[in-house]
Image (tube, rainbow, N blue to C red; front, side, top):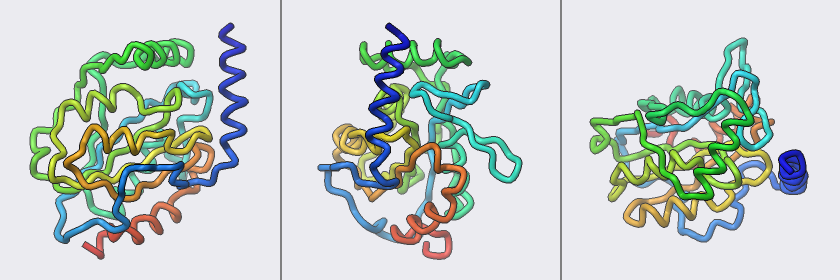
Length: 222
């Protein structure tokens, strides 16, 4: 049964892979094309769980090697954004670490999804209120955000802040996650994000920089 399920998910991902990177994927929530205001205090908060064997909970690579350095796929995207914007950066981590192998991580992630479990976080951002622009990064697990991301939005108040999502995926694009975030944070401003296939992350720097320029978030634009 497990083999059949994984095969079915992989087959669906092949069909969905025809979607282009950074596609809006039928986002219904209103988003801004450019970050409003100037002189921003920027935070990048990202979730990334690269496994030792190089796969993650959706049967795709979760690690990339760029110029000889090893990153999680979302971690690398966060690093590029951080270098280009001068933002502070924090990794979202759970109080109880996720398992370090594919089968156990996939099983736990699916159990959390099916039972709406919001795991406790180890991450504590004491000066969160100081930031007005928050880049939020995550992979797509089982066609939605990891449940730790829901814990993150439970814990912090984004009212009056600007949220900019970025994500890596196995072919499913945003998979409805931008609308999920907008629904949880109705008093925040949402700005057009950047979503890319995990297989393209290693070569994504130029595309990320072009996106940051479009939304007015390169360091020299602030």
